[in-house]
Image 1 (cartoon, rainbow over the protein chains, first blue to last red):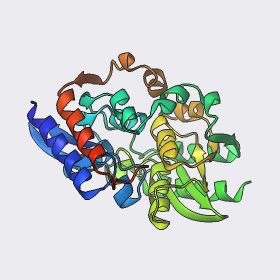
Image 2 (cartoon, chains in turn red, cyan):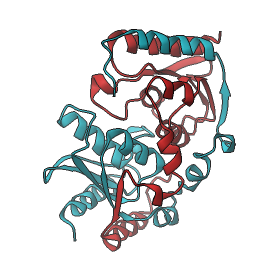
Image 3 (tube, rainbow over the protein chains, first blue to last red):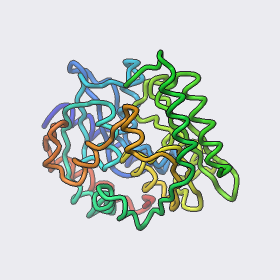
Image 4 (cartoon, helix red, strand yellow):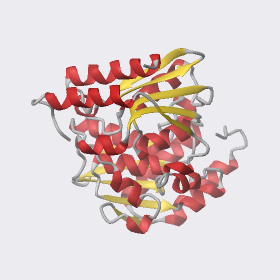
Length: 154
Length: 154
């Protein structure tokens, strides 16, 4: 099997052994070297965002002191959920290798289908109530930001 | 204006002043009290996942030592991107108040439309290459997880 996927699986196994959360692991690879690794620690750290991919991406970006991981690849034991897909997008990782599918994950109790159904169309957000308030004041913040000519765009 | 949105805006303003990243702020409220606050720190921390909402959610879950924020509300200066929407879903926050729209954010250079276009259908992931490998080995990890009868489901 793939050597990097083997490492991602090792991470998932650590998570199972320590009961840190769901059975998911991931590694970020750059120039053949693993620069970030992680497993799901939602139960252990109480952080709902600490999926394996997010943990690995955070470690990798810290390691190279850049939010731009466009020269990296991600290996994950299971197809990323929309949160992790989006994090991959923001981190600019161009290639993702995954093992189990989201249907496989759903079978063991980790179903993200709802997110796929609701994300493309806000009006479908029946589960999460969305209320728009104070738009004008928030737009003023954008104006302040744009006034700073030395801001770093990304 | 809304008192909690005012606090979210204060966060966004700190981010602009310190050049931490995009002009976005958020707070998590529980029983009328702010238990988590954050602004975008992508540039400052190099962490591509550190959007205002994620930072606020992480702080809130740490504060109450639970990944379950179902008795909380989130206030954010701008409509959450799919990563943050998904994080809100996983944290079980049922109500989100937002100010500026994603179209407003796109106008100042923060466009997440691509994510909305590609998330519902994997085959549209042209920008991020997805490769499935080693599914069987990854499924074995799921089996190990299911064998642990004391695992905490979430």
